[in-house]
Amino acid sequence: QEKVQQSPESLIVPEGAMVSLNCSFSDSASQSIWWYQQHPGKGPKALISIFSNGNKKEGRLTVYLNRASLHVSLHIKDSQPSDSAVYLCAVQPDTNAYKVIFGKGTHLHVLP
Amino acid sequence: GGIITQTPKFLIGQEGQKLTLKCQQNFNHDTMYWYRQDSGKGLRLIYYSITENDLQKGDLSEGYDASREKKSSFSLTVTSAQKNEMAVFLCASSIRAEVFFGKGTRLTVV
Image (cartoon, rainbow over all chains, first blue to last red; front, side):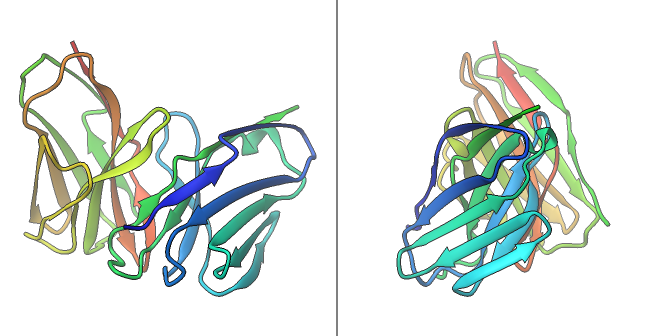
């Protein structure tokens, strides 16, 4: 069964820093991979997704996928205090596209 | 845009009690989910439903039942609440792998 692991568990950075979040998964044939943001007391919200090897940029967010190394990363440029949240990596397995698997998340704190 | 509404927002139950959580979505999505979120354990899939009247067990289905009688609604029943249990239950729906979540029901068992 697909496994999704995230690192680090938590991260504290000053405002304006570049943030790098990591996610490893177990099946190179997995379909799309998503990053979600969750603020306290709210449900997770999708930020960005990637399917093909390489990178994808949307605003301050860039995601990198390397299927050979089973690794995806999310980079947040010019981080803001409002970026403070839990970031979840989610993988859509090839064996069952409906059964989206989430990692445990990275707690990000951006200090003003 | 659409919305996923979960009721109640807070649920306090007693040990051994049967408790029902409800979820409504107006996205018109076929697929719906129930996840449990515990501190330090991430989101764990309890049940999902590909279409109306379909039910599929997730990794954490033991101790739970689910019902999908209409496309727009998906309910979850805790069959026997465990003492000191505290968790957030998240309902979600999806299209093309993007998952949309409700705000959650926070369960406390006394």
